[in-house]
Each structure stands twice: as C-alpha cells, then as structure tokens.
Length: 299
Ligand code: CP
Ligand code: NVA
Image (cartoon, rainbow, N blue to C red):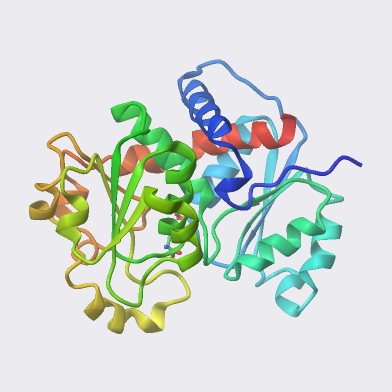
C-alpha cells in the first residue's frame, strides 16, 4: 500500500506547493458551480480541545465536496477511556479516508500518523497550527499580493501559531519579527533553523515598525487557563492597539486566528478597524483546507 501523505507541520509541503495551495484556495473560493470530487469520502475529526472554526470549516468543506465528516471527542469515544492512539489510528483509518486531529500533545498526531493508512491533518497541537497558516497566507495574498520579501510582526506569546509563522517565513521568504516577553519565546531550535529570516525582540514597537502584517493571538492558549493571571501580567506591554498599528506601514493589515480577547492582546478598535482582515482570515480556513484536502487525497 502506498504511504499516505500527511500534513503534520507546514514543512510537510514545499514553498512551491504552499503557493499552489493558496492559488487553488482562491479558485475554489471564486467557483460558483457544484464540484463534488469526494462523493462518499469521509473525514474523521478527533478533537481533544474546543473548536469553532476548525470544526465547521472541515465539516462544511467535506459536505461541499460531496463527502461527509464525523466529529469524534474523547468524551464519548474509547479514546477517553484509554484505548491507545496507535490502535485508534489502525481502526479509524480502515473506515475513513482522511483524519484530522486537534490534540494537546503534538506527538499524539505524529503517533497517529505513523499508524494510519490514510492522510492525517494537524488541526492544532500545543506546538503547531499549520491549517491556520494556509488561511492566513491566502488572506494576505488576497489583500496585498505576494508575501515574499515583506515584513511580518508577531506580537505576544511564542505559541503554536507563532511557531507555525516561523515555518511559513522559511517557506514563503518573508521577514518575521517576533516580540515576546522573557520566558514566552518560541522553541529555540525553531528559531535557529529559521536563521536570519526570523528575529526575536522584546519591544513590540520595534517589531511593528514598517511591518506589512501585524499578527497576535491570545496570551493563554487552550490548556493554559490556570496561567491566565501570570500571563496577563507578563504580556501587559504586548497589546496591539491603535498606537502600535500606527508604527506599521500605512497599508499594513492586522490578523488574529481567533477567538480574540478584546482589551487583552488586541483592542476592540484594532480588531474592528479598517486594517483588520480577521473575518476574511476566518472564512479562508474553509477554502484553504478544501485545497489541502484535494492535495492530500488526490495529489
Ligand atoms: N483559529 C482556530 O483554529 O479557531 P477554532 O479554535 O475555533 O477552531
Ligand atoms: N494559540 C491558541 C490558538 C487557538 C486557535 C490556542 O492554542 O488556544
């Protein structure tokens, strides 16, 4: 049996494939006719954590493609009662055509993929969120054209989305400036591997100066709820507000993977403001993941 193609991190695709996925996502978004290449195909979705966008975009995408999606949670499957992830992978991948997982531990998705007969997609782990970057890069291209050579400022936590921006900077050739407080940096090895494409700073203003894109995310990710108080204190100087946006290029855009906490990592003024493209970004999860499903299922 041919080895299935997985999407565990962004580095599972090349820069050229990333660009083709963006083009294809834009085509699928513009298409008006019915297109059902995946009739009777089934996507299994395992969610250890909450989700609105990821769940609905994958489910809607599969239905639009003529197939179906099954939502599985540890609360009501044997996964929650200790059935090994290896066994779950062997069984589920004999029944469905592609699997998406959102897990706490990144290794869970890797282990699942090692035992799966069908493509496995990372729908967010504690380390990476590659589907988010497909949508983010599509959204930037739609609004501002090619991102190669541009400057992106990441403000706040060096979290799963930030770490995926590091991979995107490598694949699509943009400059990434990360501004975060001490103790909340992305993994050292990821920074080293990215070389001079990625710069780590402490001052959010320095990161944002003349940036084309300003991005942030929540201060406490899913699973870090009990750290909320300590994080709120550590991140006080990392709120994206109007004064910070004013330092970016006049045509800079703002993105956030959502859900957002107004008044914490971003002000309501910026989130709802003229530079914010967060709603297009959210919509593009649907189109970008449909392009991804095509790539993994049909090559
Ligand atoms: N951005 C994102 O992944 O949203 P959900 O948690 O709602 O899926
Ligand atoms: N960093 C956030 C992203 C949510 C889509 C989290 O992991 O909770």
